[in-house]
Image (cartoon, rainbow, N blue to C red; front, side, top):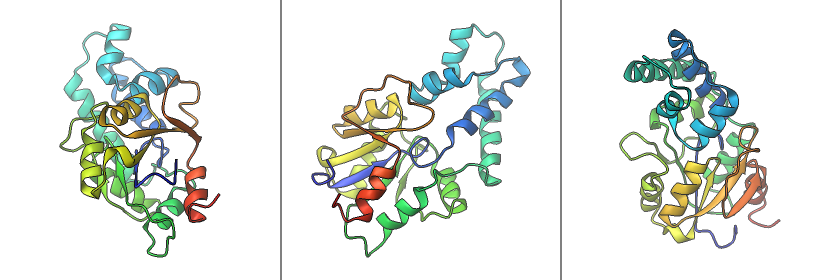
Length: 221
């Protein structure tokens, strides 16, 4: 798998950043005025993985009177506050992985990019506050979000590589589906939120440690 790849595309939330619990928290604060709380199980499956979002929650629980634009704006404000306060953590080995991949001395030379639904500015702030270098980032600012393949296709185009020779590291159904629609090879990265979900991908790894081990040894394992 590693030897045939020309490039890597990394999803951010759930792969490099342990941000999903704070996304859930921000939504629950935003929904307090309507007396609703999103459970952890519902959030991991329906929000984070399937991407059904607020409309899906309203439909499942037949919530009445929710002002969707207001709730979304409130959630964005709350989550941006967490980011600005440095409360959104990277996974423990993310900074080291990005430093090695970004190093001119890295013997396992592959172009790479962070490709995420999350806006560019938020990703950049989280990386800086986590002590990680800031590589090329394609955020979901002006592109159709996953499961559309647009974000991954933009990233591969910027790197000058074909989808067929590129590995996409994802933690959600919508991300794996976007990779498959774009003709990429998908690698599901297991974390503490998605282990019980039924997500089919080309490969599965447990956290980012296998990637770090591979690049740290120049691709020799």
